[in-house]
Length: 185
Image (cartoon, rainbow, N blue to C red; front, top):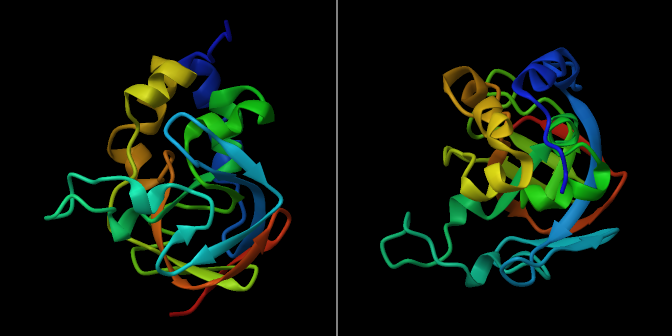
């Protein structure tokens, strides 16, 4: 059994997390979810405006947030800060358990990336959506209740500690190690 960090441990990592680059960072991990409960790490992937991350099951997932229950286009691709997921997971080998398709080292906060902000990753581009990305029971079971508390609440949501929902606005290829750059809309 993995020992989870305490809330005090996580709070002590906050300055490091908030020191993520604001304009250009790096893509640290790509993780597709081919089926519920499965993860597949990739060194290179295709982001497609209509299909999402090729090899991921986003398009097949239902959503309570759409009128017809189809996949939510405003939650097509989820991204999480590498420093945050490292703090809650305790090991890079556990990053994929967060469930996010992309792990990036860039400041995801609302102040740095308001809704509508765009990120260039490889030859693809994504846009931050208004759909909040929140912690859930699965996040708590994988990383502990202190981690869930750490990513929840008004300040944590403003800082997007749990990550951000995005939609793909330009299809393209991405690779681990690619720059993640803020671009003007």
